[in-house]
Image (spheres, rainbow, N blue to C red):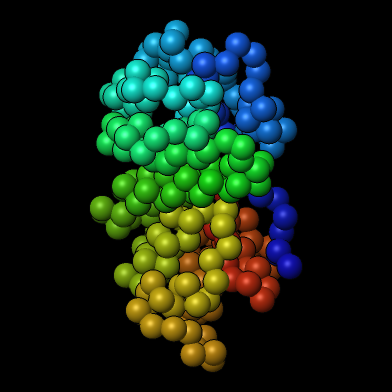
Length: 239
C-alpha cells in the first residue's frame, strides 16, 4: 500500500508513424487507443526538420511494400534522432531487413502482427531508451529536489543537503528510477553487490536519514514513499 497516492502522471508518449498507406493505419489506431499521441505522415514526404518540431519518443515505419528506398529512410532519421525506431512491414527478404538494421533500425516486425506483441515491443524499446537516457544524465530534478551525480550534491528547495556516500548512492538509484517501485532486493544488489538476506535493516535506516535531511515527514512523505511489501518509490513533488 502506498503511504500517499499523490503521484504525478507522466505525459503521453509522442510517436511518429511513417507509412506508405493512403489512409489511417491499423497500427495507428491501436497506438491511439493505448493513449499514445500519434503523428501520421507519408514517408515519401517526410522531412527531418519534423523531428525537431515534434520531439518524438519513438518512430514506427509502417510499410506495405518495403523496398531498399523505403528502408533507407533510416539514414535520414538517424541524423537527428537516437530513440526507438521500429519497422512494421509485410514479410520481406533478409537483405532488406539487414539493410534497415545496418542503417539504424532497432527491429523489424512482420504483418500480420497481434496488437499485444506490437505494444509490448514498443513499450520495451521505450523503457530501454528511458533507462539509457537517465544513465547519461548527471543532474536529475524532481520538483524541489535536484540531484547532481558528478558533484554528488543534493539540493532541496535551493538548500544544500549533506548526505553520506551510501545515502547519496541510494537516493541516486531511486532518482534514476523515479516513479518506479525499487525493491529491497534491487537496492541491496546495487549498493552492496549481494542479495538481500531477509533481515538486514540498514536500508530502512538510510531511508529514514534521507527523509529527515530533505524534510520529508516519515508519516506522510512527499518525496520518498514506502510501498509496503514491495520497496521504495521516489516521486516528484512541488512545494
